Length: 257
Image (cartoon, rainbow, N blue to C red):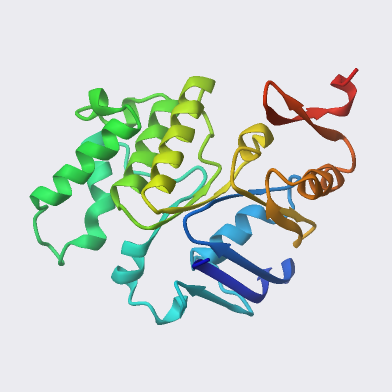
């Protein structure tokens, strides 16, 4: 199986505080891995290390090549990023913001091409925000804004997509839409790594990477009983994973009777 990105012996400090211990993780290409764990476990920090946004004592390799060896624009074409609570210029129109996702594909100051515009149109449609394209970002609701930011990440059309809490502010129907888009990306050969607090959505991923207290507690297939046991342990037994209507769901222990 091909590998999309590898993290080796990576410890990460924020100031004088060690947030992540020495970690090793390998993410298979063409699969969706959900990163989960308790609050403060280091999930977002881990994703930022993978994206090259935080320094690390170890190494990150993208498609077999050290991340630091990739020219910035070339790396940006291969790896698209959506952070949590990302800042954006509220006076930009939705269309122009999503068009920013095409910058890695254009020469400096070069105008957008027909291919760029086609990618934007596709991304807007995928996140069902085409009707918002002429609106200013600052005029949108939080949920609408999140869908637009997701569209910007999709417009990059990178083979690897990293998303930190992509479901923030999304209602259940739009969460389902996001899941459908992820499955489309996987069907086209893409790789997705996402930090999720929504455990029932995470359990639909191909793999779970469970982080607790700055280390990887488990990394394995989401359907595995061993993974379910590790997930329960990561939350100190306060949740249990059970089959419901043909899929696995995580329920608070006090709701199981």
